[in-house]
Length: 215
Image (cartoon, rainbow, N blue to C red; front, top):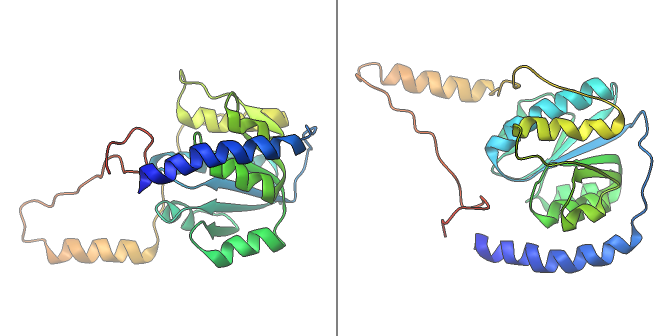
């Protein structure tokens, strides 16, 4: 199923982007934006890294509304982080709200590969920034380089450079969890104190990964 969706994204996305790119006009970055949207649909590890970008956006554009548009697998990353609203890809209601009521001043597209996020950004944002040197990047009004010789967090933070801001961090933002999750883990540990060992499992690459071979 994932491979099928990738093919749709690749080929149908190519045609859509080719058509929409006829309506792109470059714009000079502003110094203030009232409404900002960050798009991150997949990859839980990269989603955690984007929290540093959200912090940078908050410091760069103070008093701005910062929303996140995300997928079901990574929504938990943002639900306990200080953003204004979270919209979900699998929610028809949220897609309608974004389409009808929340036209954004600028959108940060944090998907490195998939075409769908660039297409969504085109319809939802007046200005759009994403990674350069890809076919999909022709839908952006601004681009940032994607460098393989630096940490991914810096690639995301480089999205602030077109706005005249150089934002670097010494440490990543901590991933926070809600009280319900904390209570559930504490309860589990209390129930299993008699065990000599409690094993935690860290899942690896999911089938949504670009290089995954999982069907």
